[in-house]
Image (cartoon, rainbow, N blue to C red; front, top):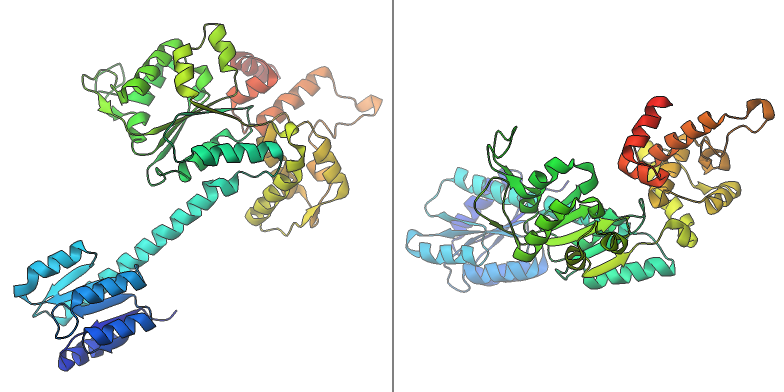
Length: 442
């Protein structure tokens, strides 16, 4: 790698020569400009990592050099050299964007330290920007894959409301990508610099959910041995994503409604409210309007959450997206496994098109990941993608019993939802307790 580039600017030739020799000895690539006008020409013709400039010069001062550097390359760090009498001007320069200043006379070691700190700061900021761009790529709209008419409509809706703070309710079956869309909403909004806090309401026991959401004071209940901030407070400045909101108990629904209306929460056992500044996105695979009619979901809360309802289609409703998604998941799996997998054989493509995909995109991702592991060649075949049930032996002597079929089906569904018993129970049409009993029996 080439060494960092430093530009030194000063009217004093002796100072320039001394600083240049010293910083070159430190392994830096150094250019020198005798005065501000020469510095402006240098900045126009090349990019520098750090500019070390005198503040007061005969022709063009350090503030003009700073302004030119910021206009040309905002990532450049500008260090000012100043006499004690112009300290106020140096402080003003820092308000305008200078990184730091050195007061004359200074030791050469101080110069080295200041330049190294400026370079470290620049690297850190560049790395943060790179990581943020990578996160946005991972969770932005690029991850919501689909060219079907239904998915284009969804993406248009999501883009239209991304910068709004209105509450969004995502509707759709398990595995349709509701959390993925919620993350894309967050990373495409003005709140992207804030936190994204996801909560699966169905995964938290009812007795603990209020404390998880709103926080609690020390001693508020048995086991509350310390004060704890809730997830609402953790999401301040960003986005709170409440998944499976249709599973909330009525008592929790009342408190959620109050938090939305008041834009504040009160921790369990507390006496003071915590003000909120966040965007609320919720999701459910249940029919909330039907739950309202049955008296199991508050109508006033429903209308608060569903300011902007967006329905995500099931994968079987957009079969034209299956090849696109399958190829995407195959590329990702091949990269993780270090394998060279180029695509799907015709029989595999036919099987993917004909499968029902009860678990939607999540099931497809799991099937492709499994196929990538099993594939012995560059091309994935139907034998690689077929699930356990699809490849069950059919010869009379080898036909599975009903118990074996039930065991295989439950195992398949659990695999598809990655062991999430709440999601598996919903796909199977039974309660979680029944699923747990079946697991023990089988």
